[in-house]
Length: 149
Image (tube, rainbow, N blue to C red):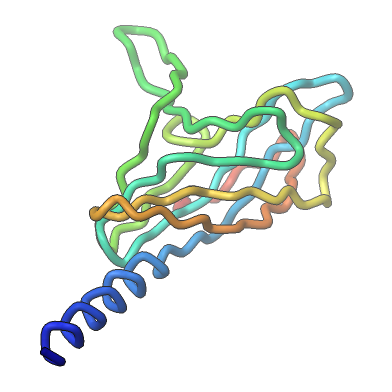
């Protein structure tokens, strides 16, 4: 009787620890000019176990969405995506020109030197969700992340 309970508890602990191993590095948000109502957020996300990014929130924005830039024929188009896959152990870059976060209906100007608090929602293979808090520094309008990012 004790063995099945221990196995169940151990399995739960393993899945919880795998879910908790989502890391975010090099986050940043592009600064805005006065009255601008949208901007982008960029970062590298990595999960120890297979997972997917399923949502994002930001206090500075009325609405935050996951987006993708992709070539459609000869035209580069941006579109909202519901999820971004996070393969186990492989970093996924959220960058200008690829997958990224869009912040809409900004409540104020976002200025260089500030930080923006983001909450990423990640879902594991079993459907369990976890919020990952990120404090992203705001970079100048002209900022470009290094080529390795």
